[in-house]
Image (cartoon, rainbow, N blue to C red; front, side, top):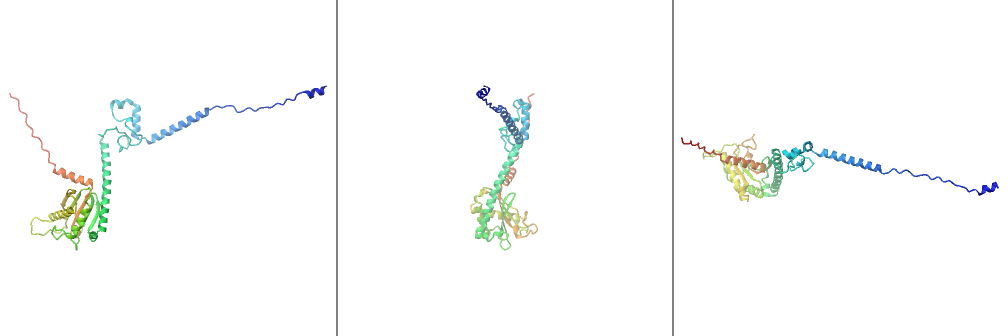
Length: 312
């Protein structure tokens, strides 16, 4: 019986199930997002501090220290600048600080703007003069008439502009001796140059020069001063005959031997020359401004009428 009971007893099999990981939640994701946001804000702050000028920083500091001071008392503040870049605001020439929009009474800003305009005009003049110089050089080399006298034509860029000098030669003078009569080849040179300068906007200065040899003539009062002036005027007529407008000339002067090309050899033939200067706008303003100052009449004080005494 006992054996039969054991056989009839059921077999129980126990299976142990392993449990999964505990649920941690998403709190770490929020912490990581806060960290990334904080780092982004930090780098933005560092970039703003690095790209903001000292004047803007002071303006921001003053605004948060006394925010109503600017609005009540006037002056520049944090809101005056439209850009966080150095030199922001209405005035692009300002390197630091801020500028009120529409405020053009600051003498420093006016000076900076005038200097910027002057520099830009000088650059434009330099480009124009370089173009003219290249044009005349090409004209001399390509023209058979001028190529023969290329050694007597000198181009030089000076502070006043492009200077074209036609120098005399002992074997090939530009004028008759002691006279303002233009030689035929000199006429060809002047007319070719005059045609090249026909479309130039800049004003032109024309100077006549002689050597230091005293002018010998029976005519009293006529010297190298008059001779150099007459030769300059003769050259002017040839330039105008080539088509250059008369109002293009700013001045025509005779300098005699006051400015020698070779001071160590004052009687040299190269000292006898005609100088044609294509003036820069700065040189033109300096020349015309000085002339206007000389020609301007002196102010006359109005007569003061003595007060009449009241009847006694």
